[in-house]
Image (cartoon, one colour):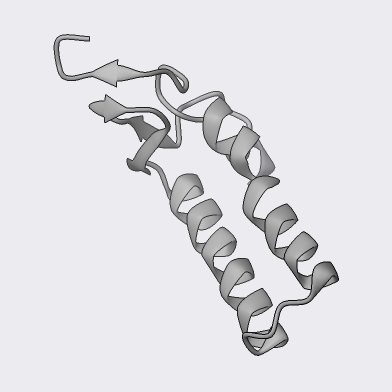
Length: 86
């Protein structure tokens, strides 16, 4: 199972316009996106909508930590794209 996580294949499609990752194109991408969303929702539920200083830090860390994985596993990497001719 671990070998399928490190096979070097992209997990996310490149966006046609703008910067960042598009939708997942592999099960690993769907797993990462689902886990990321679940963690963000979990933090929101645990804090019950009342965010103090520490809760903001946890929310930011949970939101930002997976971004390098998204960038590394996006087809063609993250860069600004202007459309299909790019």
